[in-house]
Amino acid sequence: MRGKVMFVFIVIIAFFAYVLGAKAGKARYKEISSAVNSFWNDPQVKKARVRAVKSAKQATADATAAAEKAAKRAGKRAQKRFG
Image (cartoon, rainbow, N blue to C red):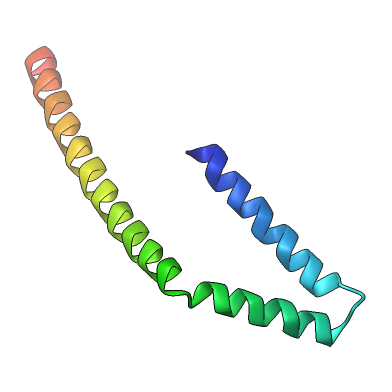
C-alpha cells in the first residue's frame, strides 16, 4: 500500500514539474489543465473518489477500533502484572 501511495505521489510531482517547467508555455498548460479537468469531472472518476473516501473512512474506523481493543488488552495485562 505504501508503494502505491509513493508512486502516486511521484506521478503528481512529475506532472506538476512538467506543467510548471514546460517550454511549450501557456497553450500547453491550458491543454493539460483542460485534460485534467475533464478527467477529474468524469462521472466514473467521481464515483471512484466517493468509493475511495468511504473505504478510507471505514479503514480508519476499523483501525481505531482495533487500536482501542489492543489498548484495553494491554491495560488489563499491565494491571495484572503490576497492579
